[in-house]
Amino acid sequence: MDRVLALSNRLRQDGIDCHIDQYEQSPEEGWPQWCARQVERSKFVLVACTQTYLRRFKGEEEPGKGLGGTWEGHIITQELYDAQGKNNKFIPILFSQDDARHVPLILHGATRYEVGGPGGRELLYRRLTGQPLVSMPPLGTVLEMPPRTTAPGAAQPASQELPSLPQLERKQDFLQPWNVPYPKNPFFTGRENVLAALHAALQKRGTAALSGLGGVGKTQRRRNTPTAIARITSGCSGQGLNRGRHCFQAWCRLPVS
Image (cartoon, rainbow, N blue to C red):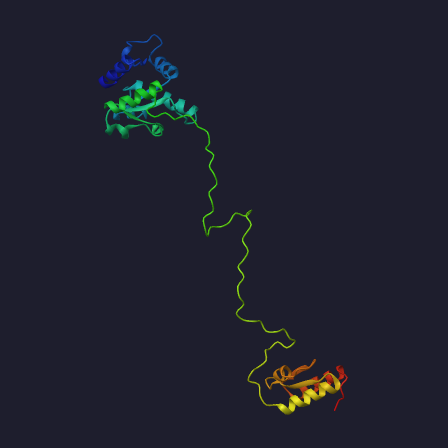
């Protein structure tokens, strides 16, 4: 009680119109109405958090004892409930750091002030008088910043034209296109009689047919025949070869033997 009275006297001395129940002997409207009116009319309500006050705030005091603190707890709780928890009015104060655990739950979100030392009293006084320790400076104008030059190797903007690619010397020519999907085998040798017969047939009739099992060298024989078109067929049986040969000869209008 003495600490609360000393704080109130100091605040009044420093120009703050502070009211506590110790200044009243018996208000004519009665203590319940006086308490409710003080909370309602005040811009700030300082809640001195002690173990005894918390017990009474929560309604856990012995029957018939500490009725003022219990009544005040109901009023504060109801006002915060009506404000949907928004609080700029109720300020928890501590007379020692140990009193921090006695702050009512509904005031845990508010800034608390330890008024047992000069630093805490100064911050509380600043809060009550609207003189913050740090003030937000006025908003200035946006600075105009030049664009940064793109560093070498960095991605170019989409709107900037890309440089042309360097001309590189070709190290190897591509194979000349032709109608057989295999290159000429430089190690192809022999088969002179077959090549001569194929060349003679092409010279005489303009078309010729090569048939045989796969892998016997039909493609390379065709590749080593520098003349027009030759049809190549393959098979895995004599019957299939003969059937394919006869069909191809008929399609090319070749004599059938």
